[in-house]
Length: 281
Image 1 (cartoon, helix red, strand yellow):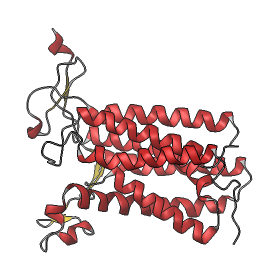
Image 2: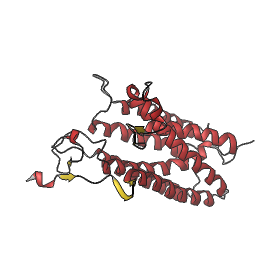
Image 3: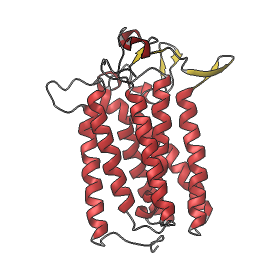
Image 4: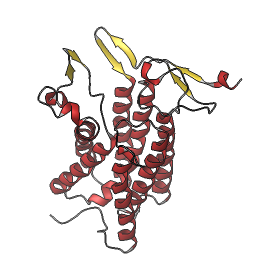
């Protein structure tokens, strides 16, 4: 009787086709997150009377940072044996394999996080907007983006979990390597958790009318996001063999971000982080 509740999943990863071009759900989620995120960011800037031109520049920095950082993160952390070879290194930049355009299907959230931090440092050097002030707002949007991207992973029938007997288990029919048994839909677990994190962060932001202690929301957000990642990784099939390691690659990469978040929270309460929106040129 329980088997009747299992979800047989065989969705087309391509949202629609226009000739040889096909827009994938994953790509749509990625782009939608940036468009919707930009709209939210503009409202935040206007609320605190910050010139919207800074939001325009910031979104460009974020788009490039996420794309480059996530791609490099996947290639270097998860598939270095393939990409760091003389035959395939160029596929990191130009995703063409065996004469076919494969798209940037390998994207790692930890790489995106590193890319964002680097991009924000460059943004600060050029625009002199307090980095902690920016991070307290950007993190809210990133949580929303993560929710859309993980839903895209579900539509792609990728990054699934271990086999399970829970009634909401999913049988991923499109990927033969997933086998015939139901598995944890870890993509949906993460997507739902990130949506909740987005909702909580937005509530805090608007409840305080944007008047936050710089770095504090971002610190708590780092702890919450990467603790979610660490916990949910226990349901996810490992993509990198680390032998008998208790933690997976994704979990080990999450630990520094949790520690960074805890450090920021402590520094914020001690009043060490610079307050205000602008810094001196």
